[in-house]
Length: 517
Image 1: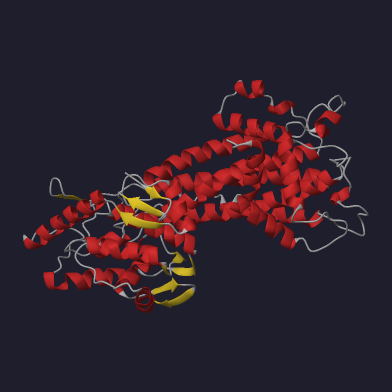
Image 2 (image 1 turned 90 degrees about the horizontal axis):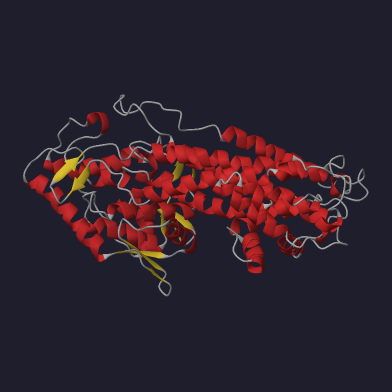
C-alpha cells in the first residue's frame, strides 16, 4: 500500500498504488521514493526466473535474443551483457531540447514503479540505482523528440538509462555533466546491465505518461481557474447570472456543466454590479458568457476521462516480454503500445484548446467598445494616443490559432518501424507533448483575460463585484497596477500566467469561498 511520510517526504513504491498526486509531489516538490517490502520481494522473484532461463539455456525474446526485427537472432551467454549495453547505446537517438527536470523526475518515478512489479525481470540493484538517482537529484538529459510511442518510449528511455551505466549526460545541482561524472559527484555507483535489463529499462510508456500525469494535474487547476476568470469577465461586462441557475443545468445534467455553473455562481455571488442592471432591457448575453458552463463543463468531463486513463497507466506494466514468476511464463505481447495514452492526450489537448478559444472571445468583448458600451475602447482612457489592451487580444488570438493546429490528433498517424515488424505505432509521446504546449498557451490566454477583466472592473469601482471576483481582482491589483497609459504588458502577462500555473489565483479564491469543485 502506498504511504507518504510528511516528515521524510517519501513515497513508498509498490507498483500498484501510485497516484497522480504522488507523481506531482515527486516531480514538483522533490519527494523521495523508496521500495515497499512487497516490491523488493517481487523484484527478486522476477529476477530469479530470468536467471533460471539462462541457467537452463532456454531461448526467450529480450533475454537472449536480438530485438525488434532481429528477434530470431539468438545471443550467446558471453555476449548478453554487450547486447543489453548496445541496446541502450543504439536506441539513444533523441533530438531537440531536453525534457524539464520536473518531467524527468516523473518519468523516473514511473519507471521505478513498473520495475517494482517484478514482472520485468530486472535485478533489485538496478531499481535501487534508479531510486538513488531520483533521490539525489541526478536528472538524465533526455531529448524530447524521437519516440513513436510503441515499443513504448524507446529513444527517450534509452537516454535516461544511459546514466545508470556511466554514459550519456545528466544534470546534478544545476550543472550538466557527463553521466559518469554526475553519478560520481552524487556518490552513486554505475552498473552494468545484464540479461533482459536494457530492454526492461526502455520498453514502456513512462515518458508519455509522465508528461501526461503532470498535464492532467495542471489541467485540473486550469479548469477551476477558468471558471473564476470567466465569472470575473461576466461581472465586468455586466452579464447576467441567470444562465448559471442550478435549475437550468439540472435539466441537462452533464457533471462538468453542473460544476462549472456552480463555480461561476459562487464567484459572482453578492455582486453589486449584477444588481445594478438586473432590470435592464438587455435580453441575452453572448454565447461566450452564458454558455461558459456548457463549454467549460464539456472540457471538464473530457479531463475526467483522461485522468482515469492516466491513473490506470501509471500503475501498469508496459514491458515486453512480461515475466510471470508465479507460473514461470514469459509472455510477449503489446502492453508497451501507447494508444490509450495517445487518444487520451489528444482528447485533452482539444478540451484545453476550447478553454482558450472561449476565453479569447470574452477578451474581445471587453476590449471592443461596440460590444461593451460601458467600457472605454481597448480598456484605456484616452484611447487613440493609447492602444491599451488592443494587441493583447492579438496575442490571445495567435495562441488560440496555434492551439487549433496543435489540437490535430497525433494518434491517427502511424509510420511503420523496425523493418515493418512494428507496423502500427501510437505517436503517444507527441500527443502528450502537444497537450503540454496547448496547456501553456491556454494559461497565457487566461492570463490575458484576467488582466483585461481586472482593468474592466476598475471602471466599475462604484459597485462591489462578486465575492470571488473581488478576491481575484485584489490579487491582480496587489501585483499589477491599473493601466492609465500605454506600457509594456509582456511582464504583466507572464506574471499572471505564472500565478495561474502555480495555483495562486485558485488558492486565493478558495481561501475566501471554500474549495471549488
